[in-house]
Every structure is written in structure tokens, then in C-alpha cells.
Image 1 (cartoon, rainbow, N blue to C red):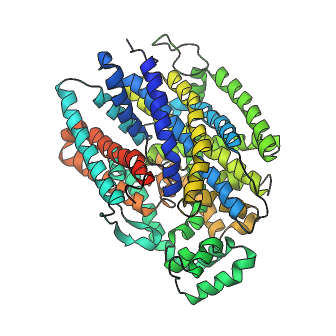
Image 2: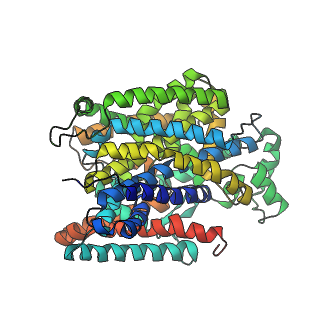
Image 3: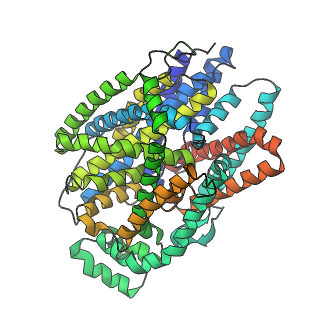
Length: 608
């Protein structure tokens, strides 16, 4: 008999934990440009809450903790979209654009709440397709499930797993604190001008332990290609990419700085001028070429991921047909209960929410209703791409899928503001879809009901939307956008919107041709692995995503995958018993320190 999932403890814990993490999340995302894993962190906090409030049901609390973890994942998936608020801020600061768009907290709340709920519903349609695919690992979901099960287990086996989990967590906390808190653990440089090196990240290494060797090596291959082609791309297109981000009235003055080759001293008048008006000129002068070449690689990388993912979907059309048929059934034939939200409910609710979203975007941003509808239609295949990449690599390409919709949206309108609105909507839909699928993986492993998890994910989106509406203006007021809060993801979205207004001229030299080549390669790699049974071929999703992920992330992930493969070879029983638990500890430990403790210490000025 399945334990009761919805209790006052699980609901109160869900609200407390999701609010706590979501309110701290915008600071992390705006500061670092990315958000750490929260699934395992939420599982830790949820277990502590249930230990205090539900002691009598210890051993049956896993599904209740899954409710808490689901709520926190939902809230932070929405809170991540503070990058869109930052993108509008950067657009307003862009001197080459006359358009200024100011969003009130209420507008931000309603906009993110509506688009996020659509993402949950779309993801629910494809739950079985992804969860039943053996190639889709969803490492964070696996780690969260292991954490939940271990913290709710009693007996000798539970004790052994608890020690393994504790060891991994201690390592994760210690390494992350020494690295980020004390700044005593330096990156091992390999090619740092292209952000390639070995970062001491237990979270990335633990992710590598959970994914396959093929995916890990595919990500390493992508990093090697960046290292090989990076210098040529900088020579061919680097300067033009820099020039595209500079307002015409400052272009000559900035180019004089670049021709001089001199790097101005920090806080000097020249430094401040380039910071305010030079776009990526400082990166160019300082030899930090990764942000520049990323704007070249993003085109072929996105094309490869999209064509590979859509080819994989088409190859499994029969299973997708059966999946939709199962959603039409009233109850599960095995349990006598409905496992998923019905297809009818999903369709009608999505249509209603789309109508509301179209109205909100028309009233708030002057966006034509038909453009909202078309954006959601094109977001559907993109969410399949994003979830597939996440399933293999454990890294969600939210901003990249938003960029992809920006490129498609250019076919409808050159309007810069509307392009950014479409990007934010696509990003929110994709972020929720990816978070929902991780939650489904956790639920599958702990025995939760997918339908219940869908409604919890759906219901806690407003918590994340509120965190953006409340915290973003407070953080910008305190730290300053572009100063204390770099928000590089928001800057990329804003720059992309400006570039898209220029049409095909937005493509850097050589990028368009290689985008076509990459799109074709994505199809053939997928066909070769699926039909040709050539398992040695690289994963197109992992390889493509590695082109725009820093090598500092790819290298430790690949190292973890290689170590996991070697561990399985030399000690298979030990590997089967401890791999998931140890990896979960690594991931959870770093998530705990980077996702909660360090932001608190940074906020109060205890460490800098």
C-alpha cells in the first residue's frame, strides 16, 4: 500500500522549504549566471523538516519528502527567470536601442506564473516518453531520490548508505567552501582564455558518476573542439562579434582602445568607459575569449541539439502514440488509479492559460496575441530538446532554448522588446519542463504518484514568481545590475534580442554555414546510434551542449564518467552499492553550501 503523500507536514514543509530556497535563488543566479542544483538541497531540508514534524512515520516519509522537493524545484525553476528581468534591465541600459521596457513586480509575477504553468502541462504530456527512455538519466532526479530514500531508511543497510552519503556530502561542502568561500582552491588551467580547465567541483564530478561514459566523453570532445577551433574563430569573427555589441556613437573610441592593445587599470576612467560603453571589449583586451566565441558556437550548437532531439522523437513515434493513448485512459490497469493528469485536462487547461498569457503579454508589452500563440507552438519542440539534453548531461539549456526561440521569432517580428518577451516566455516554459522531468524521475524511484507531483509542481510556481518580483528590485537596488550583479545570462538574452533585429547579418562570419553542417550532423549521429546501432558515436545532445558550456564544467563531468566506468570494471559490486549514494552526497554537499549557506554569508558580508 502506497503511503499517503499529501499531509499537513508535506504541504507546510513544501511551502517553507520552497520559499526559503526560492527567495535566495535570484541572488545566486544574478551573481554567478547559473543556478546550482536544488533538488538534493531541498531533499536535505525536507528530511530535516519531516524528522521534526513526522517522527512517527519515519520510514514512510519518502513520498512526502518528494512533495517538498517537488515544490522547491518548481519555485526555483521559476526563480531562475530573474535572468529575464535582468535582460530587460540590460536592454534599457543599451545605448544602441531606443526602446525602453520597464516591468513592474506585479507584471513580472503574473507573466512568469502563467508561462511556467504552461511548461508543467507540456512536460506532463511527455513524462513516459522521457522517463522510460534508458538513455535519459536525469542525474539530479536520481541523486534526490537516493538522498530521500537514505534519509528515510532505518536498519543496517540504511546506516551504511547514510555513512556513504554523509562522506560525499562532507567532501562536497568542504571543497565548495574552500573554493568559493575561502578562495583557496584554484582551478587547474588548461586553456583559460576559452574557459577550459579543471574546476574542483564535487557536483560536476558526481554528475559524471551518474551519466554514461559515452555522454561524458561526448562532452569532453565538444570542449576539445572549442580548444581547437577557438583561436581560428577569434581571428575570423572575434572582432566583429565585439563590434556588434557597441553603440555606434562609441564605436570609434572603443576601437581605438582595442587597437592600442593596452588593458586599462581597474576603476580607471578608461576601465569605467569600456565597462559602460564597450560591450565585450574588455573581454577582448584581457584575453577572456570564451564569452565572445560562445556567441559563435551557440548557432551550430543549438542547431545540432534541435535536429538530434527531434530526430530521436520522430524515431519513437509509436511509443509517443501509445503514451497519448494511455493519457486518455481513466485509470491505471494495475493500480486502479489514474497515474497521470488526463490528456483532456492538459489540453483544455493549456488553452485557457495560453489565452490568459496572450492577454497579459498584450496588455503589459503590447505584443500581438497571435505572436504569443505562435511562440508557444514553437516552444513545444524546444521543450523536448531541452529535456532531452538535461536527461543526458544533467545540464539544462534554458537560456539556449530561449535564444533558439528568439531566432525563430525573428521570422514574425524584428521588434526587440517582443523578441525578449518571447525569449522569457520560452525560457520559463523550458525551465519548468526540465524541472518537472527531474521530479518525475525522483518520484519514479521513491514511489510517488506522477499526477500528484504534476499538481504540486503546478501549484508552487507562484512562489518562484513572487521571489523574482520581490527580490529582483531589492537586489538591483543594493548591488547594481552589471556591477555587483553581472547577470551574464540576462546580458546574453538582451544582446540576442538586439542582434535578431538585424536579421541574417546577426550571424558572425562562418557561423551560418557551420550551423547547417551541425544540423545535418545532429540527424546523422542520432540515426547512426538508433538505427545503425553504433553505440560508440558521440551523443549529439551532449556534444552540442558542450560547445557552449564552459570547459570548467565539462572536464570534471567527463572525469567523473571515466572514473565511474573504471570503478565498475574493477569493483562492480562495490560500484552498484555505493555509486548513486556517493554521487548524491557530492551533488548535495556542494548544492547545500553554494545554494544556501554561501549566499547567506555573502549577503551579510561575513565572507566576500
